[in-house]
Length: 478
Image 1: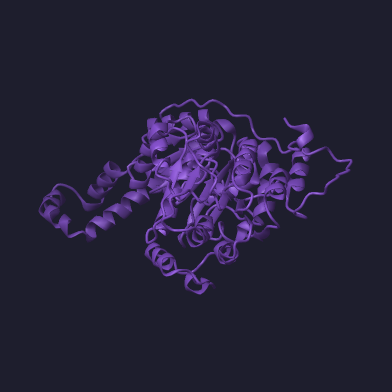
Image 2: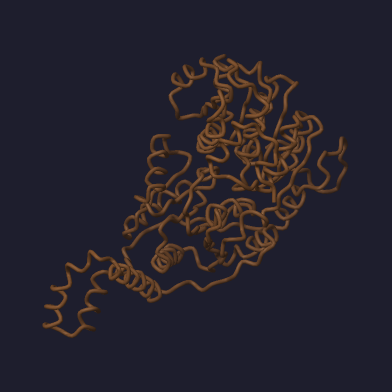
């Protein structure tokens, strides 16, 4: 166990960390911070939810100069949500220093950003597209950058930002410290690090150590046309206070959110086509409990920091095993227990085995719940509400009314009627969802996954192989 007091941090940074309530460093923080403080380039291979922002945020606060009227730190993130989250957390770590972090991203008023950039924030956190936009406008100055962080590098690769990242790195001074964080290490990320980093130290934290311990994982084998009724039955059985449902496409998310509301649930969808104002509104409602179910795509949910999520439902199995780890990492946090249930069509079972190989954990099968089981679940929720009400002294004012009711009927009949009135019975309103084709898990896909697993970090200069060329290689760009 490593505490932050053992990491030789300045008084101001320790004060900020203590204010945030952090005492013990996570594995990625304990290994990364000393190297970062020493000015080393490093690669942190760790999944979401491991505390990476603090891992690079503390070296930033310690190594950059407080109060200097120049931008010295740059953090590149794949999504707007992650840029906002990282910016907020860095500003909290800098709360006792003369250091300001500015998030910039698409969907935000460009004129406001230009005005804020003119004030020379010490650290900028931004998405590749918006950083490039300001570079073209010459409204961002990178000449004094001393530290660059690439966060969720594999996700930026998946979203097609690799060339933008290369352009950005060419514009910052070569004499800088570079930190790269990625859940996986595909070959293009290895090549990027080889070109732009100086003898980086590599730190790996396995997913099994950080994201899965407190989460019960199950799968339900169900045909495509039965998925939605199965989801509704599970929601009625579990009655989650806060749940996320993951869909594979934007269309799926929109249709699911609408269908859930038709069935009487409080749900909102979030995906990449929403305006920033709408995204912020949805997230505020979800965090405050006004919305109980968030329906999201992988990209929209990447980097969201949401506490208190008790259940994750994978309505569609994710495209790759790493995304599965990211999804279920939304629950089972901060020592709390969580539950993750994945819907699998019969043809997707081989894909489930790939996920089990990555997580090194058997995902237990459970039968699809029936309508009767859903009703029993709702009845149990009502019973628990009644028992809580009995303990509430405010219910005593209804005692005389209850006593007069007992003169008109027996107690069991009256209580049965009360339970019926209070119980939310399963809603069978017809809904229509567009069918999504099941994922295929072919041998060639398995081979590609194997090739992308980290082995020797640096790629060979000349590679001769009878195997198919990696689809991301420079001579075979899609």
